[in-house]
Length: 352
Image (tube, rainbow, N blue to C red):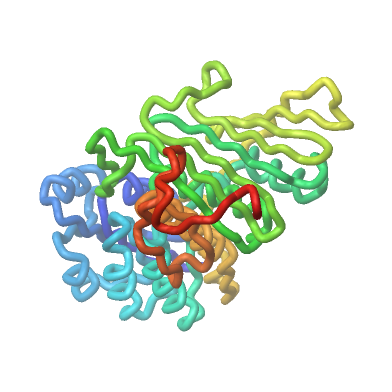
């Protein structure tokens, strides 16, 4: 198969991962990069001799159209850049996670790509690593019985930037089961931003699927992780066992009927992981004329949980799905935990 030309919009962390993967692939030829920062373009020219750099993505699309485009800018710009890229006769497109800054924006991107039956990659690293994939297989195979609860602890990150990965893994575990509702509380004592997004200091996200599978995610600055030496912990609780693992680390601990005293499993890592794996898979789909949107769709559902948690925190309410049609109630004047005023209505809970 002849190498496909590829370009990347955005020279940040995600863009660098795509560039490295494209550069190391036998299926792609990295030819151009666009970034609004001149110093980033200058650095990339030294890193990838011969690459063409642009300060505007549309100028790059007009001057140097490619077979594949990787959209690696910050989330609020994904829709604009992706829709501009779709004006090209593309063979495939990669859009970083989260798909957009809102589920409505992410949905519009995905719908436009589907209209063109265009192979797509959304590079969630946890579905390109052996440990998470083996855990998904075990859960779906009933190795810990019926999944009931997924607890996630993560320090020094936030709901939208890291949480999108963790929640995407939860969605994968449930087989994209529809969500019923989500609640979130975001504490914002510091003015922190990551990847161009204003984020919370600490947060708790709680959601449940239609069948009642729960996810509880604690994220933020200096979250106390209750497994020593770890900065990320997942606990999967089922009716016949449990699994604990540690985010990006290879290995997990399982406790079930087969391993009643618990067992540490360290599977052999995949030869190709991360962005490289997602781009290689997309190349194979392009070659065979196939379109598989299962990961983009689960990524969109994870984004819906993320947005729902933020809406819940802002409006002090439970958010039901679909989130992009949810209408928040009027800000309540009812403050739980203080003495009943005796006025303004209300209902006697003893008579419910």
